[in-house]
Length: 235
Image (cartoon, rainbow, N blue to C red):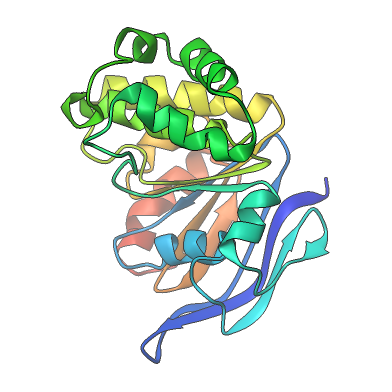
């Protein structure tokens, strides 16, 4: 399968300190790839490079086979890359409806944006006039996902979807993510807590200190290796 999103030998740094050491990742259309690892491993930096938000020092970023290395984040967004950052990424002082209205910049009407959002997350229709900051954490994450889906993305980048949420809510959200992938979207999910995402992932990669130390299908072998990898051992 040809990848929709591909990172090749990506190196990236912050203030001269290397954060990514030659990262290779591939995500195909309709595939969920889980990027796992401890805090500080470089997972979020990988997503930021894929979205064009953080520059790569070297390596290549390809989208649908096109080399878009160094492209502006707005150009990558127009090409179908959607990043939903850690911390929900909603406007807390605006209503649910006004949060969705912000997404009409994509060229869709308010009605079209709301139709997609409310069909996917019916609870948001009930909360349409409620201020986003007063929603539960799970509802805020649903709103963030709904806003992202309004752009009709080809590639969805999710950072710590489970952060601060109850396991039952996390399971419901990841079922939605799996459904999004089944519609042909390439999904790259960063998670610190592997159990949250491995049940829906087609492929998993474990990052330690800026390097992919293990990748493959999320089978029992990978699960048993995770604790050792998180402690910094690749054995």
